[in-house]
Amino acid sequence: MEGVDQEEKKARLTKMSYKDFLLNVVKAHSDVIPFYQTRTHGLYGIGIDAVPALDCWAIHFPGFQGMGLDRVPSKGLTFTALGEVTPQEEFYFHFPDGNASIARMLVRSLVPGSASGNTAEDIVTARMDYGRLDHGDSPVRIRLNSTAVLARHVGDPASAKQVEVVYGRDQKAHSVRGKAAVLACWNMVIPYLCPDLPVEQKEALHYGVKVPLVYTVVGLRSWTAFHKLGIRGVSCPGMYHSSMNLDQGANIGDYKPPESPDEPILVHMLRTPCQPGLSAREQQRAGHYDLLATSLDTFERNIRDQLVRVLGSGGFDPARDIEAITVNRWPHGYAYEYNPLWDPDWPEGKRPCDIARRPFRRITIANSDAAAAAYTDQAIDQAYRAVRELLSS
Ligand SMILES: Cc1cc2nc3c(=O)[nH]c(=O)nc-3n(C[C@H](O)[C@H](O)[C@H](O)COP(=O)(O)OP(=O)(O)OC[C@H]3O[C@@H](n4cnc5c(N)ncnc54)[C@H](O)[C@@H]3O)c2cc1C
Image (spheres, rainbow, N blue to C red):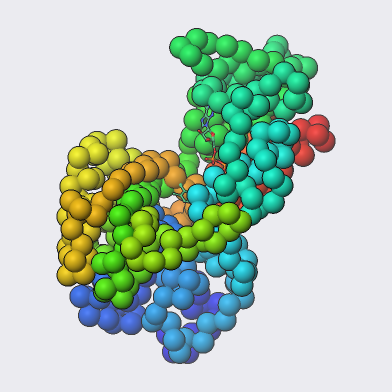
């Protein structure tokens, strides 16, 4: 792009996929494409055919050297990449059980006595006392296994003083009333939960399509095969799971990672059931069907086959070495992030998520969908906003 200024370069890169960038701008050999195709799966849930080149530049993919791009986000350009939306810190904290520890810490603060300790370190091995979660003597009560089916104002929304939430639990319908409600579930279910919402808002709530992901965790008797091969992870473009990595050696509080290759360990495998060639939202929908229709047997066969093909030369024997397999299917995983390859450039305040999260009298809307941004920091910001809207009304 010689002679093209910074703004224009970025504008072009935001409207072309990384795949097209490699083929048409870098003029890389087409054999390069399958090698990189799944490299974006973990962050985006879709391959390089559907991720803008500018995002791949932001996460340091190759091919942009010498283009002189600076890292100041340009006005009006969408950077969905983690590196741009979420400031990256030098310090990296990895909970062994993922974001579950964040939820557990929130619960521990809200419901005194629900878990021991008071630090980010001690939550890792703390046991939750489920009996405390829904207790009459606590100002905050958390009722598990309760699916809300209706949220409505009691009487005319304009003058109502109460909200009623109807939920299903133990095969029965129950209801609770309160001064207000925050719907912190997924945008696409809210129109069904809250049929009184304005039509425009319901349409906006339907727009995003959650990104499907599968995190498979395999418990191994030992990791001697990894040790012999001198690897800790493998990128497997073209295989059923696109990557596999040994569990990160988190050493937090009383939680100690395995140190010797003879010790048991967990292997994380990633699969994103997308369908290249379609738009991002259609790929997501195809992934939902895929996850609904795939049996555990199919997963297991593919996992065993893949592990032995990758690790066999290190002495791996699936019958001997695999102790357990957990397939975590997230048909509705990440929140949908707007994709400049297909989504329009909405004016400020007019994106579907801006319309979708409008407060509806005593009912407000949280969840990462409300920010159209996948990560937990956004979920927390949206929850904060939804509560403040209630306090200020
Ligand atoms: C596999 C995976 C890995 C991730 N890794 C990271 C990461 O490393 N870092 C990061 O920052 N983010 C990560 N995320 C994203 C992070 O998990 C989300 O940003 C965060 O969970 C969103 O929080 P939330 O409270 O908005 O919604 P959610 O966590 O989705 O919670 C919504 C809740 O609403 C419940 N619900 C839905 N409908 C109803 C109903 N009708 N009645 C009652 N309850 C209902 C759901 O069961 C769910 O518990 C990851 C997500 C996935 C799927």
